[in-house]
Image (cartoon, rainbow, N blue to C red):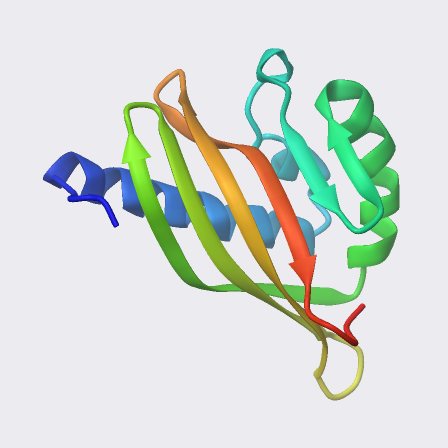
Length: 139
């Protein structure tokens, strides 16, 4: 783990907030707000899951309709957020995700690990890449 300064502490808070905004936007089906959590297309944002890699505008245009179907009726909890490094305008983060169903009695539907690279773009932290690794026997 890197040695962190007071600026890093502020950046860490902003990164944690971005992670929460990302999950809330998914759960509330606000896909424009979810997309706003990502860096500009010029930096080639990349979302990777078991279905493949989705890179840049074309990839995200294919991803969002599929993702919208998969996330409907679920809550996504981002936990154990660990920011490993912040070097200039680039940060590395790992966090867990717990997925609960919202219909009837809440039930655990899956869990996973996110491995993230973030960039500070125009003064705001954004995801550049998120790789999701689902735990065995989860959807």
